[in-house]
Image (cartoon, rainbow, N blue to C red; front, side, top):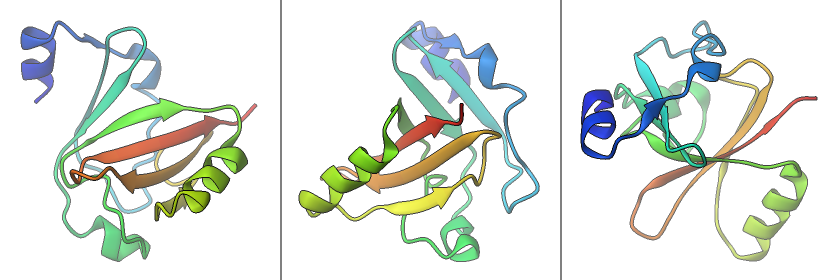
Length: 118
């Protein structure tokens, strides 16, 4: 997947994320972080049981996911709740200093919203 997105779509590795992973909390699979300079994709090795192990309905490691950064996680959660979009709150689970939530779009693509701790 990493090679596909880098060669076909000319995405670049996101070097700032290479050392940020937390692997001791239930997932130590391979992850490639790629970007076009604005949008990141997190291409994760499949782990079909991570949702069960963490007690969450959304599994961000089924097919990887699109990631967006916010400065106001509370506002994002409120908007999702107002729109009736269920999400899984993973908190500070997989990345040092990141608070993460995950949800699915109508086609089943997984979307991450994260806020970096200041």
